[in-house]
Amino acid sequence: MQETMGLLERCRELFGTTDLYGVLGISRQANSAELRRSYYKVSLQVHPDRAPDDAQATERFQVLGKLYAVLSDKEQREVYDEQGIVDEENDSLDQNRNWEEYWRLLFPKITVQDIIDFEKNYKGSEEERQDLMKLYRQHEGDMDVITATALCCTQEDEPRIVSLIQAAIDKGEVPTYSAFAQESEQKKKTRKKRAEKEKQEAEEMQREMGLDAEDSLAMMLKQRQKSREQGFNSFLADLEAKYSKPTKSKDGKKGKNLRDLRDRL
View 1 (cartoon, rainbow, N blue to C red):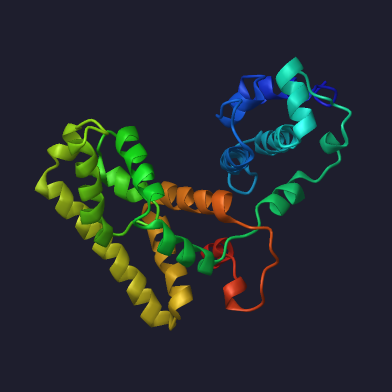
View 2 (view 1 turned 135 degrees about the vertical axis):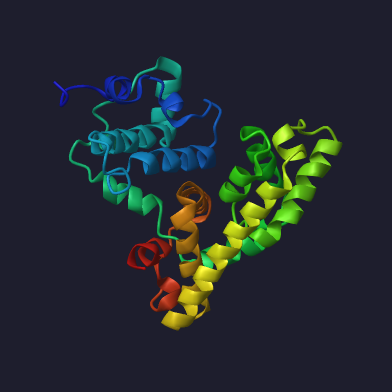
């Protein structure tokens, strides 16, 4: 029965809706970049390698690949938007297609140098400010969660982040949450102590293993992963979805994949 079931029916069965845009959590007006990024984030959640406990992960992953193939094709998207149907006979929906390979072609691996370059341009940008405001609203001012999930955030960044949020509050851009305005000194100290411990552990490993600057960054990120799994994966997801480019990997250390480093260490 499942083999003859169409894409929309499979979406209903696996995601609870036949709305392809709804599955990705985007509007029908989403542009190609927003579509690609949303597809990446949702597919990452059910990727067989990253969701080993999900018995339907492989099926969900394959369906998401087909969904993206439809919406990323101009003609197929227009038909779906106008008629609410999908051309099941289209070559892009071939049942024998290797959807893992398709995914990898869309999202080449991120290198450590990519992260370094991104951080340099991201910090202090309007994009960072908007992301912080979104996190502030989403978590109602809880700085523990905000600092754990904000991109490229270290303990040294916290005063700057607090200032950005306070400035937005003063301008009326975001509401005042008690968790932020009335945060206790003890909570701040605990957060600082935790961050210092992570940094110290990373530095100790760097010395013990004789790591260079690049591998040291990977080690630091691994330490962060241990205590902030969700934030670390969100960081990688955003980078890979937004900034990965379809270029061939270079030989040598700079061609190393951060995910490979993370798994190896």
